[in-house]
Amino acid sequence: KLEQLNLTPRVAVHSNGTWYPVLRTDNNTDYLFVFSKDSASQGNLTVSSTKTPYLLDSWTGKRSPFLHYKRSGNTTVIPLHLAANQTIAFAFSNELKYEIETPSLHASRVPSTVLGYDYSTSGGLLLHTSTDPCNDCVFQLSNGTTYGLALNSTSLTFHLRNWTLIAEHWEAPSNMSDAATQATKHNTTHLDTLVSWLDIPALQNASGLGYYLSTFTWPPNSAYDVDGAYLTFPRIAQGIKVSVNGHDVGPLDFTNPKVDIGPYLTNGTNAVTAIVPSLMWNYIRSI
Image 1 (cartoon, one colour):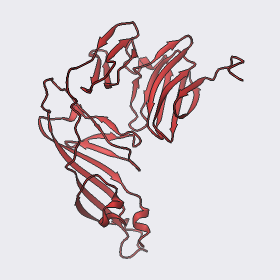
Image 2: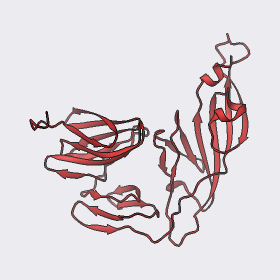
Image 3: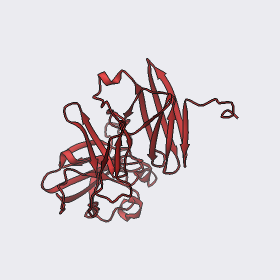
């Protein structure tokens, strides 16, 4: 009925899932928070604003110009792919360009092979593209300029399988009335595939931190010069932090864990450490 009366929301959702948007305005900046419920989904947000959109990373605090959107009248249309229970936050502002390096053009068409990007005034726009095949590999800027990103190559995606799990057990001290001792800790080492702690008999009643260690060789054999890589994980239940070759790459969105590790790669053997917690209830239930 509202649509028949030509009354449109400030944020319209067109998605094959269920998205909940919340929009507020503060000091001429519009802030948009979106939650995707229950399942992975894709669609568009139509926002009643023509200000420049910026992506706000809730996990790292990083602010960056959003690359892919279209203008339609007095609205901005943003295409999105969201994982189950993922949240995403935007700021729409004409003033943030004085604080954040912002390109004068944006992308109106982006193929699935684009994993991310960097932008600086001195270096321009640098796309991070995978070698995975795609049916429509055309990248288009808002001024109409197009670029073909297709590569005649097999995918360079590979899986890390040689994992070692060091489990740090957090347990009650012998005197549970002694508040000065936070926890008694000891480590156990497990060589296994990536399965739940509950599927490893020695860890079914364990609580603490899991340090998952793996290595890989860089660069991969390829006919192309490969400049970097992205590391992705399946959905994590509680949270995840990752380091590559001893460099902390920061916390990841545990609903959609993916991170650019290109700046930390070295020729030869590279080490990955993923740190995840387990539920404290696993141990508490045993006592």
